[in-house]
Amino acid sequence: MTAKCVSNGKAMSVTVQDALERDSQAAFAESAAKLEALFNDVQDEDLDLDFEDDEDEEDSDFSDLADVSSEDSREIDSSPTVLHEEATALLERVKELLGEFEGKERTQLEKLMTSLRASLAGEDIDRLQNVIDEATDTLIDLEV
Image (tube, rainbow, N blue to C red; front, side, top):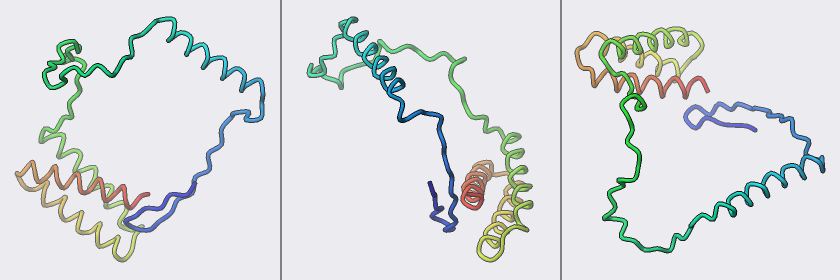
């Protein structure tokens, strides 16, 4: 398989090999038996899968859904300290990559380095988050 990055035109080829015995009749029969067993299990449970019941969905309050406890929900830590650490790590990565690129890509990295330094020196956390997002996207595009 070959993938081509839209932004810089670089291409990467990947060969994927699997361990399946595609010509094996025994493997095919085993897979078919598993699918049939699953199908029979669903039929044995006698599930009511009638989706034609036109109940007014707008009035549904979804009260039957389980509440998500605060322990189960994960939030991204976007505190100023974490953002500064992330921006500093991105700045270091940009510095490392600077020598590997020329022309347009190098100019892009230099502008990114300037933006990261300015955002780290400033007090605007929203601007810092935006620059981090931009840097992440740029580095992904350049490294692919």
